[in-house]
Image 1: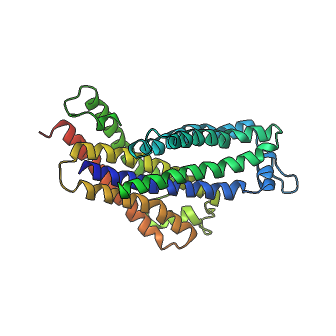
Image 2: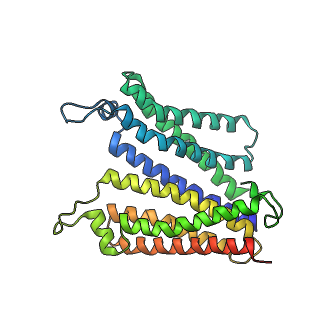
Length: 149
Length: 158
């Protein structure tokens, strides 16, 4: 009985995770956008639309709470993998490293964009999509494990 | 979640005060969250409507889309972490009692419906406001019951 109840709790937690990712994607698309120009305009500003460039202080205010939230979220979601058949596999290691690396790139690439490294505009968008892919794949594995095991 | 591995949590000198502290903090959060929400978003249909869509007669601006999305994003994060922690403790302490699964299901379903109905209110129809308020109060009540029941079980039940 406790195992069954835990399965329900984890299942609902995964649904909340999907909702969190969905709201995150909506914020990204609404405030930044997914194209090269929109990311550039958001961080470096645009004189034509009177958009100021982002300052280091402004970026820090957004990034700091997200560092803790990303770490906690990734740890909580991914630690459930240890209770599945994927435990101690190469795949789980790849998932863990990819999640933390893409999350770091997603969080810190704005500082490099503001510093003049335009290449990181691509990295920002790429890391965002890769992070979402890895977390959604993990959620899929966990749902499969809850339903079939 | 070390407490899931300890056989008798009620007798453990380390885990018992830790879980007591966690449950008391969760209870306090649940109580103060209601006061915070009454000031930020409102706890009546009219107040929520005014906060989200403004009021031309009182010169109140509607809530910006990005502000709303950030608000809901933060709410989901807090809600998911709180409900997972509370459910884990509740299941661990009361797994022998009946209706544990039903309680967990209810708190989670109403917890999920709370941001969804608020989302529906902003983007679809204002009809969702009363449903949002209903879900908000129900998940708070069930979560309050869960934390109090877990506290009772941890300290006073035989």
